[in-house]
Amino acid sequence: MGAMKYQRTILGGVAMTFVVGVAIATSVPAASLATAGSFEAVQADAVAGSAQSFDSAAEAAGAAVSRDGYVIHTPTPTPTPTPKPVATSQGGYGGGQCQAGADAAAESTAFSWVYPGGYRQSDGFGPRAEGFHKGVDMLNGEGVPVQAIADGIVIAASGDGGTGGVCISLAHKVGGVPVCSMYMHFLDGSLMAGVGDTVAAGQVIGLTGRTGNATTEHTHFELYGADGVRYDPIPFLVEHAG
Image (cartoon, rainbow, N blue to C red; front, side, top):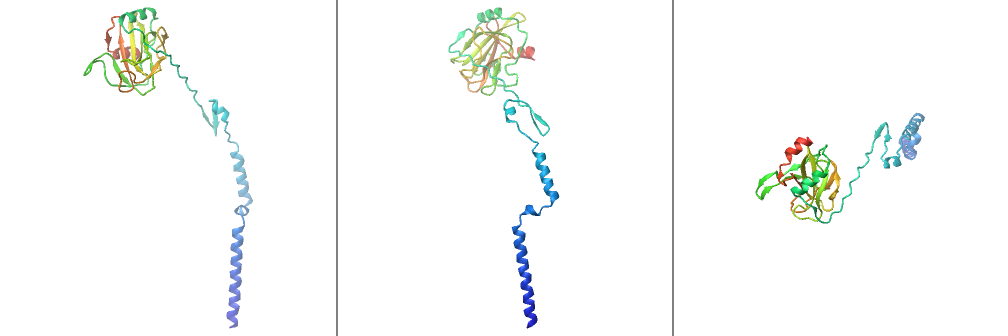
């Protein structure tokens, strides 16, 4: 009987010791158990990390910004040409206007595709179900810039619709011969030049749209000469614009 009482006393003491140990372990902060060496390592990492910086003013200005040994260059946006208001049709699209415009133009020394970045062609030059197609239809997205194929002078422009929608015609002199280019269906209000203006090859003259008799965004492109007769423009572009 005395032995059993003695065993209960020992077990009670062990239980109390276990409870006190658990209480101390759960109440002491984890950081206080770290060794001096590990705390110094954390301090060293924090100091090294503070060397990284971010200059928001430099980024906003488009300057080069250095991060961890890498240099990031932010490109400067290219300004968009300002559209030139053209409310009504001006000039003419015939052979006589082509000849007069070419006579006033300097010899073309540079050439460009209508869409240097590429396009999809739908209807080509020649017969089709609706009749003879006098040009080629170059499909592209709305707002894509349309470029002049050569140096020249604007001989006609329309900003108020009609079959060709918002359109423009340029006179060029190529090898002393009049060559006129016509571009139709521009985005409303996007003409960049008016009658009498001089343009350069590759200059943006309007933005792709679907004004006039068009069912999708594209540029109807034509070439003609002093006789006013339209001809397939693709061989000319391949020869001169590459």
